[in-house]
Length: 214
Image (tube, rainbow, N blue to C red; front, side):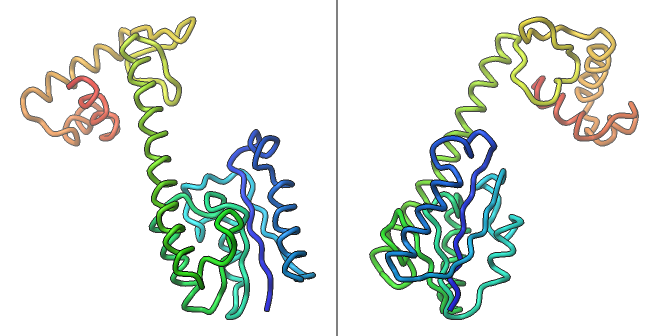
């Protein structure tokens, strides 16, 4: 039986605050000491978003590849390993089929062998996923509010504008002329793909311009 720990931080800033790698490591070390497990290996995932499925993360992939029947996997918190309910529940079922225990310290330990723990695990996975969607919606609302005030909200420079002082959007005459041409062709029923081909522009750029204007 191997004891395998998994910890994660999403950004360098988070590594220095709150759920730091050191804090997570100490939590796993203390849990192993309490259980009498003297040898263990910890997989450290740095700078990877929780929105990325466990199997698609560099250390997550190595963790899954190292697992054998009878092993124990430990993570300090649910959201360190999962943010998607579907990813969490699929992985949990795979672990159970392999006879692998999954211990989550914030849920009191083994969530593979306890019906109540699994229920809590399911609920919290869904809550974590919902919170992520809420954060995404809030960011989208902020960007829309800035855009309505003519202020650049970050990301790719919007086609048709330059970024001025204080993040103000300033129209570019040449690109605005192109936008007008795109909208004129669109009004005739021409598809974004045909418009892009005619003007020598990427189809997705044309689609974004049309969506923004309509």
